Amino acid sequence: MKFTVVTSNENKAREVAAFFTGVAEVAHTFLEIPEFRDNDVGVIAEEKARYAWDALHCPLIVDDTGFFVTALNGFPGPYAAYVLDTIGMEGILRLLEGADDRSAYFETAIAYADDSGIIRVFRGVVEGTIVSPRGEGGFGYDPIFSVDGRTFAERTLAEKASMSHRGRALAALRQFMASDGSSDGAKEPNC
Amino acid sequence: MKFTVVTSNENKAREVAAFFTGVAEVAHTFLEIPEFRDNDVGVIAEEKARYAWDALHCPLIVDDTGFFVTALNGFPGPYAAYVLDTIGMEGILRLLEGADDRSAYFETAIAYADDSGIIRVFRGVVEGTIVSPRGEGGFGYDPIFSVDGRTFAERTLAEKASMSHRGRALAALRQFMASDGSSDGAKEPNC
Image (cartoon, rainbow over all chains, first blue to last red):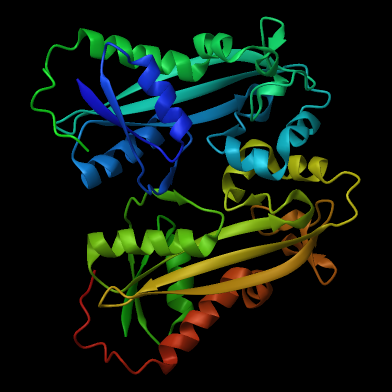
């Protein structure tokens, strides 16, 4: 089994390759993909995979991640990166001042297009709470997102990978690939 | 000259038709267009026009609007509708508590694809300040957006149309069409 990770982030591609050792051969391709808008990261990932497959015609994955804060009606949702760049973690904390409900979750959707262009979406979710910033590690919203008493920025990379939304979506995909006998890898086109 | 307004909003199409009386014949088409993400509404409108032209092959316009608050690094920008649905005007006001700079602007970009699929973008901007909600008219952010001492929700529709970002973008397009001799309208395909 072979597939390519379509991303501008080389580290992401390396992470996926390590994760699929023994299950699939993983390549890396960069492709400019328009950023489709939708409130559901699964729909966004699927649209991106369709676009990438139409351009490349080979087995591939793309992903999309959102951050959903309950008391803010799901904001910032799929626009987590944009919101971080503009109002930042500080903005999220300010919007939550006085709110009793501090729950939030991350969701990653990975869309896998197989050699015939059939697209399947695998999701990973991790639930937590919003706290004042703590910890030096991680990136993005990690310092204010706490699971079981510790923020993602207070955890090691390995620990975070094992419990994160992204890790869970990748695990669901790996499980599918490991049990999928429909493809022997020999006739799969390379990107 | 003929063109079609690609929108899910019938009122928008009627407004455009009234605006172009004597300049162009305006039709209305609905088409499901993926919502491209970008920080520039001009780029979004252009991508949408390209998508629509590939599907319809006829002269058409599509638009995109953003709301940019200076002290919030441009937030909510092109995600104005999503932000209104989640954290609302109240969220914007809370994020601005204590900020000296209350300036903001609306920008509409209209992308016009002509009968050969060439796309031109026309922009309209209106600058104002963020104030506590006032007025009963308008929609969206109108009650907190003030120009020359009055909010958009305190103005009549006609008044708003003459000074708004959308009105200005439409005026720029009309001016282009009125002076464009490249097309006689007879051979233009209908949508």
